[in-house]
Image (cartoon, rainbow, N blue to C red; front, side, top):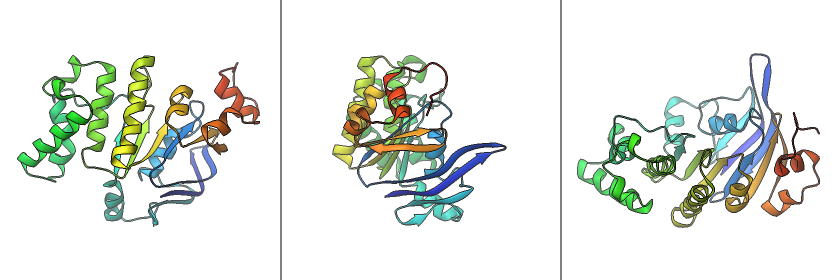
Length: 247
């Protein structure tokens, strides 16, 4: 379980998060929507322990991340996988080596065991034929899948997704969505997804949280968000925005 309790965060004179409160249940897909600069990625960075809040607490599985020792943070991060916006692949490694990198870096298995685990993830994400290709030789959608394979190579309990369908066509976006759903069905992971893509949010979410100007405006099921009476939510989901969203 992931809990944010009255979390505030600012950089210089700008307040990014303002008394944010929410709980993410084990095994659910929790989608965070909102305009650019609303604080969505800042929430992911707090979950991962890259940022500490100025006020409030971030609790992962009953352990407070903020203020924790480096050893505790490392242990909590070992429960997590990260899918970055562009895949964040290393251009000098092929697909197979990119996926296996976390296991090699942390010496978590023998060479033969790493090969077995990587082959398993390649098959799961339908990447076997691309195993020996370099990042420059594969499409944007395939890079996302490679990034996801690397994110799950250590069998995490939590996966953090930063704009997983950004820059993809509708067909590839739907494939990425299906992979996120498979991670839940087959691996039982808890997923936190930051996105601007409402079609994707509606497809995958158990609950959707609307973040506006650093504050949680509403948290609800996809149907509750679709039928929200909040003007802020309706302006965002309809795309009927000319300039800043108006409360």
